[in-house]
Image (cartoon, rainbow, N blue to C red; front, side, top):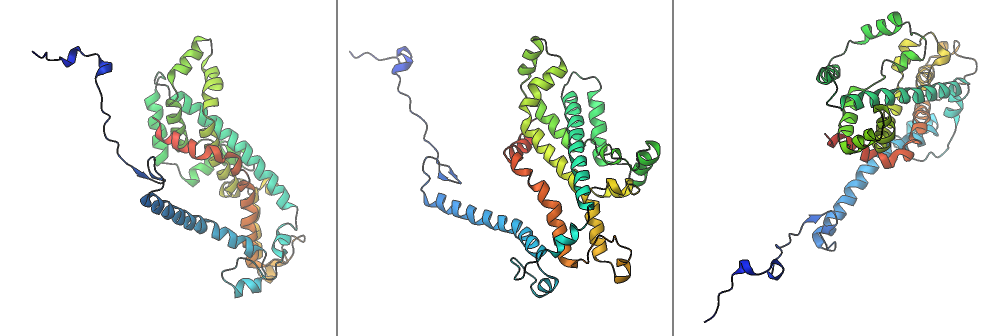
Length: 326
């Protein structure tokens, strides 16, 4: 008689297991494990063509601006789509740099950008770290106030009264640094990033004797370099491009004007009539009107563009992680 074998008595190692059938997924590099399929190659070619067109659409206007800044007024009128001028000239740049106001504006903009970015990051990090802790008393009330400020504001006139009259900050650098010391939107994203840091790391540091400030400085900040670099770049670009705050709060302190306000004045003067030219600064030269506008864009854009390559490796990671955590 044959004995029936009970499968439950057979060791698990002897039971043959069959792996489920593998599914083939098509991605940007073709099928998983096989990047040479026709569908994968077609998808890659489409991606390359699409991204190339997007890149050309983005960079073409800036190439045109650079070329037009070296062109003459006649050539700009005759060639609407100018890339390389036939008779390059530096008259526009000669006009812009014909006064020491540009150098002074660079220094003022650099000071405002660096100081403003440090102030922004300080207030953003400290407030985001505190609100990210559920044990904070009144946390929900503070969060609601932050969200409220994202949708409602006092307006220009009340802001001017507070800054210029109540705080007496008119014609000082503080008038452009303090009003925008923190961005509620950026702070909320940094808060979400802090909430994604493992709590065990902070607890182990606390057991070793670290205070809350020590945990923030030695544990949290080193892990937050991507998000700090990303929002530091956002804040820096915002300060570098800002001109309206300086225009209304520092109207009586021309020596403190940032570069953007000075370049705005140069464009206005380049469009002035012959009668207005008599009231201009004697150091200025007669400007070529259209090419000056292009040169102003180049002068104001290139310095901040030079900062981006140093922060590029943190940029995408910082935005995505901060936006997805929490």
